[in-house]
Image 1 (cartoon, rainbow, N blue to C red):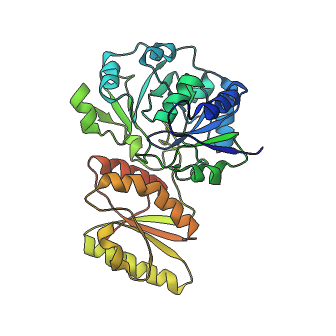
Image 2: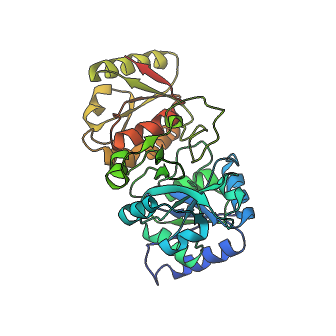
Length: 351
């Protein structure tokens, strides 16, 4: 299979040819990589079991890891979800379209192949114009996990998609670099109390301002939990990992910089190549070590935007050992650390 790449700008009629080709592929049971405001998604028909199976196969993704269903119209929600609580509509009114996914009870219209065999469905309404066009014109119920090979850093550029999935899918719609760079926040609304399953751009505090208290699922941070059955993407399996070994270093700033510098020197003496994910303010403090600028420590949005590209940059540079400091645990920092911890396999060193 030859993977085609077509550019889109999120405006008709300029994108008409792209959408016609994408629609043809979806109708024939194929897969299309689509940009969203979070990361690139690998899109198929969420109501077609064979389409979901193809998504799992293309990514090399475990089939019990649920896919997110994307819609473009709130009126479509009852087609795929039942017993929808009022809190879901309150969140939709506040955050949709946008980077929020809600887990709800599914209808019979959604096949178990899409939901990992669960009786729930994860659903969101993206705000990206290209994604919105695609859903409206090509696939009203779009199953779309991140368009990366399973376990790899998510894709924030079309080139990342082709790096992972070239020859495995029919089309990549190139909409340029995405805006946010982290996958959506996921909240489960099927229990007595809302529960955060994946932190993201929309924080726990943001959610609580709309619907009151929200729990956090222990699996968000617990490592090595083969016993859990994931209700949302990324809860059970290793995700976002670069090829090199990533370690997160926690402690006072001076201790972190000193420790990383010493470890890189030791590794260099053994012929190993190191890389450091660092804030802009500390770039010059690592001397001749390969250092990747994550952005200013005062701008977590910039750091979140750069995270997956930085991890892929480490691979491009052939880094065998990768070190990163911590980025806090509040607001967007919580989402950044969630991704980093998974990428590192929860490998943390306190100094």
